[in-house]
Amino acid sequence: MVGEHRFPSLAAIRAFEAAARSGSFARAAEELDTTAASVSYHVRRLEQQIGAPLFLRGANRVQLTESGEIVAQEAIRAFAALRASFIRAAAVNESRLSLTTLPTLGASWLTPKLGGFRQRHPDIAIELDLSATAEDLAGGRFDAAIRNGHGQWPGLRAVELFPSIFMPLCAPALKAAAADLARPGGASPVPLLGRPDWWALWFRGLGDDTPAPPERFATQLSAEHLDIAAAIAGQGIAIGSPLLFHDEIAAGRLVPAHPHVAGDGRTFWFTYPVARHASRKIACFGDWLEGEAARARDAARGWLRAARVPVI
Image (cartoon, rainbow, N blue to C red; front, side, top):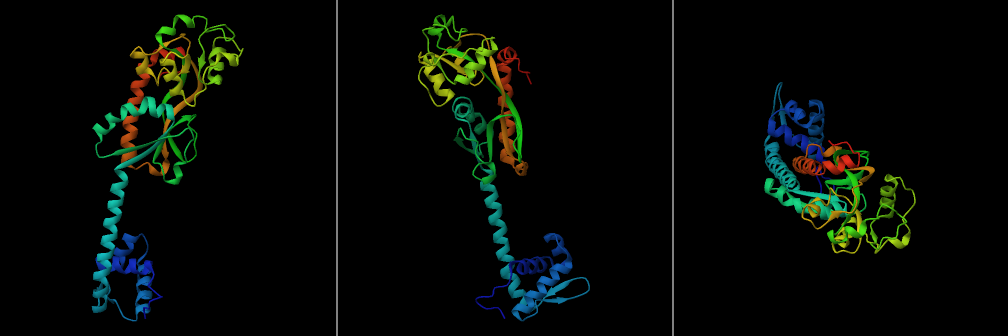
C-alpha cells in the first residue's frame, strides 16, 4: 500500500500517465523513448505498490480500471500543468538574452547600436554585462559573449566579427603637435595614452624596437574607451581602434595622429555554447550582430588594408 513515506517513483507515474493518456503501452513507450516492456514493468510495479490493478490488459490495447480512472484524471492534469510550466519557462528564457563582452567594445561600439536590434526584435530584451574577464558560458549566467582572441574555445561556437587593430588617435587640436610621434624616444610635448604593449607593437611596425620611455605616458586608465575619452578632451594621444571609434573619427572629435595602423593578430568573436545552437534568441542576435560587424568592416576597409589585415 502507498504510505506517507513511500511515494511511488516518478518513472512509474510517468509511464502510467503516458499509457493512460494514449491507451497503449506501445504508444507510451514511443513517447517516452523506451520500450513497451519497460512501460509495462513500471505500471506493474505501481500496481503492486498501491495494491490495486490500474489497467485491464488486452491483446492490442489496455483499458483503465475504475481505480486507474481515478489516478489517471489527476496524473494527466498534473503532467499537463508541468508541460505548460516548461513551455512558459522556455518562452521567458527565449525573451531575454544575457550577453557579456569587453568594456570598450560594449560601451563604445555595441551599446549605441542596440536600439536597432530592439527595433527588429522587440520581443527579445538584452541584458549586457561588461567585463574584462572572459566569463564562463557553461555556468548558465550568460547566453553568449563577444570575446577577443583567436576563436579557439572548447565547447563554444565562435563567429568572426572583425580584427583587433589600433593606431594613434588624438583631438584635432593636437594633430600638429604630434608630428614627431613616430620616434618613440622623441621629445614630443604630447603625452601618450593607452597600453604600452600596443604602443610597442605600433612602433615596431615602423621598424623601431625602442620602447617609449615611461615619462612619455600620461594618466594610466583601466580601459581603451577611457583613454579615448581623455584623448578627445585633449589630454594626449591614445592608442585605440579606429574601427571601434569610427563614429568619433567621422564626427571630427578624433583624428589619426599618424597613418600607420597595427594589429596584435587577435579578432573579436561572437561566441555561445555549441549546445545552444537551436536557441532562437541567440540566432537572432547573432544574425543582427554579423550584419553590424560587416558594416563596421566596410567602413574600416582603408584602415584594415593599412594594417595588412585581410578584408572579409
